[in-house]
Length: 274
Ligand code: AMP
Image 1 (spheres, rainbow, N blue to C red):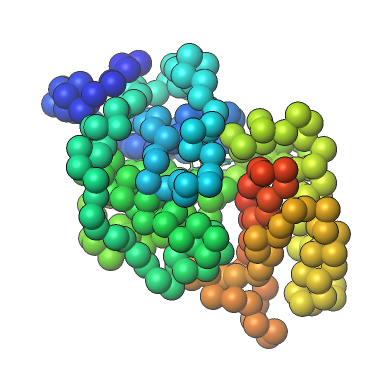
Image 2 (cartoon, rainbow, N blue to C red; image 1 turned 90 degrees about the horizontal axis):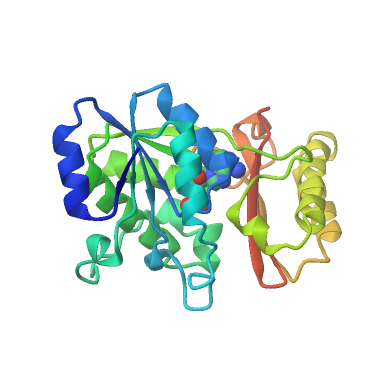
């Protein structure tokens, strides 16, 4: 595995690499969820590049950019074991030689859910993903369903700008208790709280089929009252994030959750289609 720590090193790797690339952007602190994206990537190409870059542009002032977990040695070992061809770890200057003055926005997808409490988040995500696509020129780019809104936003950016890359989605990896793996789970000394949240979310999905969405959401919000804040608990379309209305076919929808406890933000989503 080649470790590329500058744009120049990336460019010379690309010059000598024959096959089209499958690319997986990450912020590091890798877990089995990230590694599953590599397994998905292998279905599309034998030439796999991962990036590790904690993108300042997607964090607000009051968020955890400075303390975001960093485990570079373990990450490299995991990527090597997973059979990645190259890992790109750009410097801040490689990605942001100038402060971007552009604002990227897809109002129907970015003004709801995470976009409400994190108003610059998707602009930051789109900016960095667009820059990495321009630098790496992959044929495939892989994103997890774990960040489902992000996946739809990137798909729409690629479609709107006719970028020559295919966006591939990969399923959420959960632990044995159903909790979605996340770098931010490491902020908890025990997984009791995130697993309790998770159980309430799965119950909400089941209850929705029995009592209807409105009652199920009310009950789940009640059960989640130990959180400092429920940022959102909403049922929206898996295709375009439109809010669920009575009479819609529930299997086309997802339950979306974000909440804060002890200064830690957790997000998850569950499809009604499974
Ligand atoms: P991050 O490092 O958090 O920016 O995540 C990088 C990629 O890994 C994103 O496409 C995430 O959706 C994906 N990812 C993170 N956690 C999981 C998980 N538990 N299952 C599947 N994909 C995940």
